[in-house]
Length: 46
Image (tube, rainbow, N blue to C red; front, side):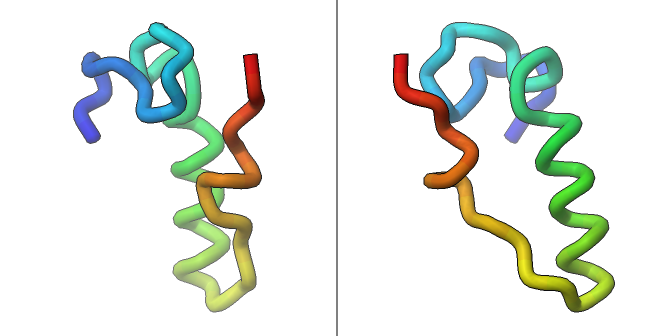
C-alpha cells in the first residue's frame, strides 16, 4: 500500500493519515511473534 494512496478502509483519506500508523505497530508486534488482529477488526463502519 502506498502511503499517499487512498486507504483500504474506504474512508477516502490517504493511507498515511488513516491506518498507516496502526498497521506499522501491528507489524512490529507480529514480527515479535505476538498475535495481532486482522484488518476486519480495524475497519470502522460509516
